[in-house]
Image (tube, rainbow, N blue to C red; front, side):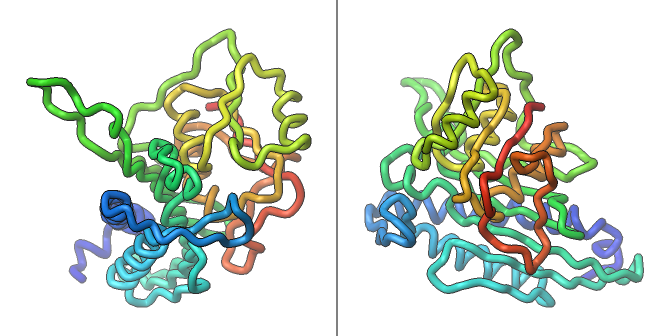
Length: 283
């Protein structure tokens, strides 16, 4: 690696590589859907699914991260759409060791993927340092898939990638303010319960959008289609939220647990949220 490359801040380099890695994972996800051989298996329940697209995208992401950051240590479990990558990278120019934890969900919204709700699907790569989300990438493999264009028109580009660094900015899309005079809440479509419904009702919403995928819900906030994301359930996991949290905070939003406490993302933290826990506040 050249001296010039080493002068680029580590986090920016990791985010930049992750954009390309997520784009490639999105192509894999689309290719497997085209073939129609999804290889669906159940994990913890009939609503908690895994497909060949999850597995193939995960393999691609791991391999690419290892190639870009050969000193990385990967902590994962075969067959689970989770990768926790602990990077210990020495940056020569600043004479420092940066310890990053990268939380990866290779296909967020798997149930929706199998049901044909393709706009709910995202690839999530979240970067944490010191236990805090500091950078993230959300790739939407099927963005614009319902906009083929008419005869004589140029088809809109398929897929979109958004990235952000806390304390910096968001790239890949403009941030849109939600409509005034309303309180639009987005929440889970497949894990509803009386607890979730009570938490949503406590916000006094004028409209509720029940959709799949944590990444997709945060995109609704960034696009100005919702004001707040509420998920008062223990089912969410750290790889679902690290990337969305970093991008949301880069845009001026907030993600905490239901009591307003920060979400920890260090390497040894429990993967699943315990208790009833998520609220993403409006931008």
